[in-house]
Image 1 (cartoon, rainbow, N blue to C red):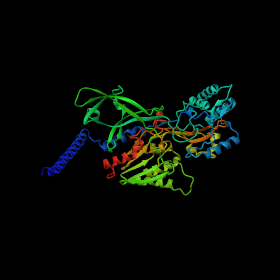
Image 2: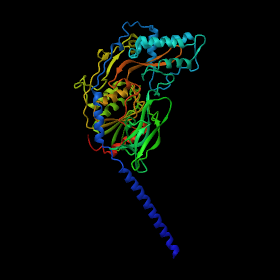
Image 3: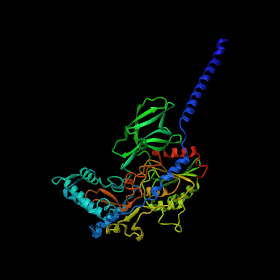
Image 4: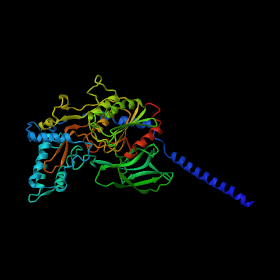
Length: 519
C-alpha cells in the first residue's frame, strides 16, 4: 500500500515545485515591470519633431574664397589625357569592389615617377575638386604638395607602401568622406566617428537614470568620473521593443573595437555607492547589405518595409526597381507606420532620392516653393573647370551652378516613418534623410550615418605611374547641419546596433500599437 502512495506523492511535490518556480518568475517579472514607467511614445515623437526646428531654420552660404580660386582656367591636361580620364571615369562601376585590378602593391617607383604622380594629383585637386577652396586653396595645397615631394627619397626607388603613406599622412587634413585613395576597393570604409555602445537598458525617473540589477534600481551617479551623465546617454530600443536609454560614446575610430567605462552606482535600498565596469562595443560592419538586389518590398505583421541597397541604377533596361522604389513612397505615406531601410546604402543617383521624397511629401512641379523645398537646403556650388566639362561632356544648367542655402518649412504628415541607417549610409542616402527630417514624425534608427555630403558628384581618376585610383567630388555642399557633420553624419533618434535595427523597430511598432492609429 505504501508503495502505491509514492508515485502520487512525487507528482504532487513536482507540481508544487513547478508552481513555485512559475510564481517566482512571474513575481520577478511583475516586480521588474513596476520598477520603470514605460516611455510615452507621443511625448517622444513630439520631442523629436521639436528638436529639428532649429535645423529647419538654419541657412548656410558659400564664402567667395571657397569658389574663386579658378578664375583663369588654363587646363593642365592635353586632349589625349582628358580623353583617357573621361574613359576611366566612365568605366568605374561603383558596385564592383575590385574595379581597380591594375593596382600593384609590389610596384616600385623612381623619384621622377612618384613626383609626376604628385604633380598630376595636385592638378586634379585644383581643376576637379569642389572643396579645393574650402580646404585652403592654392596656399594650403601648395604647402602640402611641397611636403610630399620633400618626403620622397631621391637616391632610391619608392615602394608603393611608402608612396601611399606619404599621400595619406599629408592629406589627412581633408575631412571629406568622398575623397579617397581607393587602393583595391571602393566599398564602405572605416572613416570618421563611430558609436561605442552597451546594449544594457537604462531607465529614467524623477530621481535620475538607473539600471535594474536583481530587481533593485541602481542610480548612475557618474560615468568615467563625469557627473554630467546626460552626455553619455541616448534613446534606444530594448530587445522587447521599449524605448529606453543606452550608454554610448561617439568618437573617432582608431582600430579599437572595445572601450571600457566606469560607472558609479547608488542602489535605491542603500546609501553606499558601488563601481561597475561597462564594456562598450564599436558599431562597425555589423550589417551587410545585399547589393545584388537594389530594391525589396516586404511586409511584417502588416508593416511595410522598403529596402534599398543603392541609389545606383543597374545597367539592365529591363530592371524596373528604381520605379518600384519611387512608387513605394505612396505606400509608406498611406500606412500608419512604415520602415525605410537604408542600411548599407552608400549612395548613387541623387535624382532617385529626390523623386522618392517628392512622392512621399506630395511635392509636384506646380506646388514646389524653392525657398522651402526640403532637398539641398544648404548652399552648393558646382565646379565648372575645363577638366570637369570634358569629363561630363556637358555643362550644368545655369540654376544648378550654385545656390544659396534656405530654410525649410515643416511638412506635416500623420503617419510615422522609421528610417534605418548605419555608418555605411552615405551620400545620396543622406540627402534623402536630410530632406525627410523636414517632415514631422520621421524617426531615424540605428547608428550615425557616414557623414558624406561635403563634396558630391564624385569623379574617379587614376595616377599614371602608380595606378592608384583617386575619388573626389566636383560639387561643394555646405549642409545646414554645420561643419561637424562630415564624417560624423546624422545621429540616430533611437540608437540600435544596425543588425538588430529592423527586428527591434518592428517590436516597437507592435509594442506601442503604432500600426493601428495615425498620429
